[in-house]
Length: 181
Image 1 (cartoon, rainbow, N blue to C red):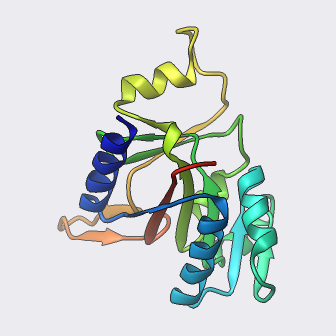
Image 2: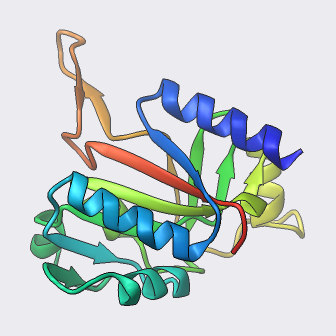
């Protein structure tokens, strides 16, 4: 079933101009992040406080600038890449769910030019209803102060309905689905 969810998530995310790749585990994700840094010619990388992100950042070769999740807004705006995890992925919409109670990532996911998210395959769910069931198993309101739903790169349309990507957030969203974590 999770293979079906991953295929569906990838197909939908691709339709909304996101990129999705599958990697085996955290070391493979680290290697792919390094390749993406080189591919994007990135020199400034911001990371959330998630343990997986900390592990990836520590394993990357030196060079460039590394910013913590609580760096000043101006520095995060200048970052080439923001690296976070995602607490859930919704297959039917290709949406990432980032929950503030589990990771300090809000600005890291919204301000840099490119957002790379690490998503364990085990955190894929079928629908928004399934996501809310995970976020609030008791049926009450979710405990997180902020829940961010991200579906593809930032998009907006001007008054003439011309679609523009990246005006109010990252121009690219890259999701790395980890088979194991």
